[in-house]
Image (cartoon, rainbow, N blue to C red; front, top):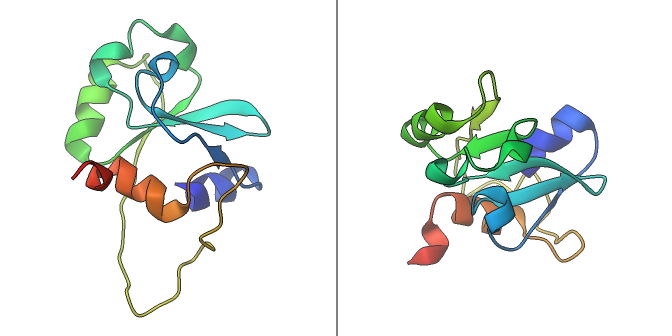
Length: 117
């Protein structure tokens, strides 16, 4: 997700540590201090939060994308992130934290629910 946003806007985003009710329990992503996207929002909470309409919503699977799309604003952008694991190659993005945010690995683990085990 960090790499995806970087390629779109040309700057590294910062990612909040946890989901937030203000972002439908998804993890907010900020670019230059402003909300840009939400990682894995809870679909049933999206309709109550109209301020999410201009943001990109990230889903962990096509199935989740479908649930989110059913609740999102018409035409709202929803991206499904795919993760390719290559254990023998170095990571594409250095595992550094940006201003107290999550590393890329922590973000992916959170998206896929691997940090809840």
